[in-house]
Length: 146
Image (tube, rainbow, N blue to C red; front, side):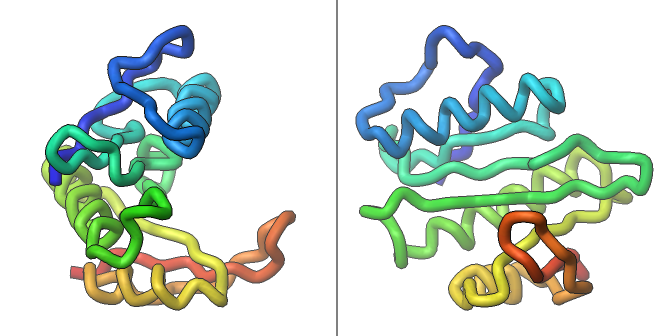
């Protein structure tokens, strides 16, 4: 799997966006860049297999005053349950550590998202807290621990 950065370019894409879902992911990343800026490697990526977009992942923020970043990942529905989300998580950790080995890598999940819990555990994250989200209520925070 190859991660390819999605550049800040709200008017056109370097990718062939074949599905409504991939178009929605692209637009979400463009909106995120308008809020946090665009500074690689702390950006969003499309996950590609043989040139096909199978998912999206990235950083929800650049390193902040506490040197934390939050990662997120999603697989297009037709590519779920193939290990792609776990590989995206792994590559985001590698990108983080290669850019700044002191950065604290976090992730957040719904309490009921057991599949994502397994992905994070497999990639050496530990549950580090419970947060309150305005939209979802209690969510779990995870921290990379290797």
